[in-house]
Image (cartoon, rainbow, N blue to C red; front, side, top):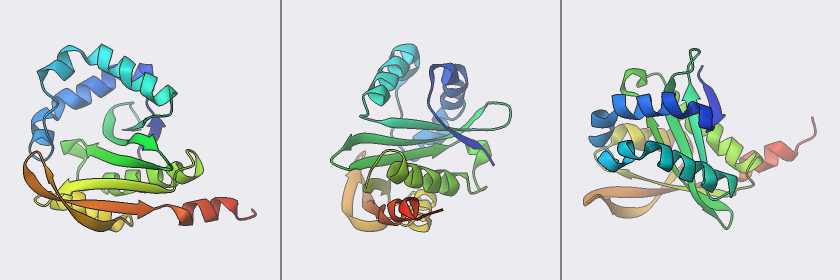
Length: 170
């Protein structure tokens, strides 16, 4: 099983390779990051790590045994006990349950490590794989939205069960 790690500066080469290799694949279901993301990758990474240090966001990578990035599971806009969840899995690693296991691990970490009580997410209607991951990991549909002009759904996941499990005597 891939290892979930909080993003660090030394992940930069593997993260950039992951984003480049999967750019077209990701753009089919989420907005493309644009050329500027790749041209200014070092600046972007420095900014993301500063946000993480400030507790505004938490960026995670799923790494294989060789240190290659197989996926990302991120918590953004942390405030008032909640955050927005986003994730992406490399095309070559899909169909192995990595998104489901990564999201589950980040849900638990959000409650027990970051003190969050709720996570929000959204997915395009056409993105059935992402919607299935959200359903399998306990997110419930809360409404409709538009993502990059296309219809989507919003989701919510309350994290009380993880916090309660963390308080049980061991």
